[in-house]
Amino acid sequence: MNRININYLRQLHYKFAPLMIFPLLLTVITGTLFQVAVVTGNANNFIWLLELHRGKFGRINLEIIYPFLNGFGLLMLGVTGVIMWLQIRPRH
Image 1 (cartoon, rainbow, N blue to C red):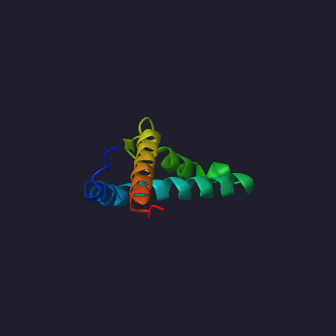
Image 2 (cartoon, one colour; image 1 turned 120 degrees about the vertical axis):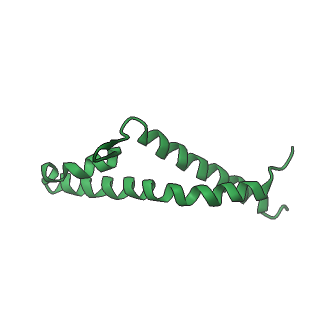
């Protein structure tokens, strides 16, 4: 089995991670805060959080593709991270 070019994988991971951190953090924070609003009975006052959570940013509406971009980005970061981790582990 050929080893994947670890330098290329590191560069890909290094360039992709900063692009993905903002949408992932935005999704986590807005989802959590909206759930707190639901539990406290204030969901109607915080619908704007749900819109951000779904990918609606004012006039820019990414609701159709935002979850797929988030999911794909997280999957790619996970896969590249695991592959790099497996290749640098000491073999016994």
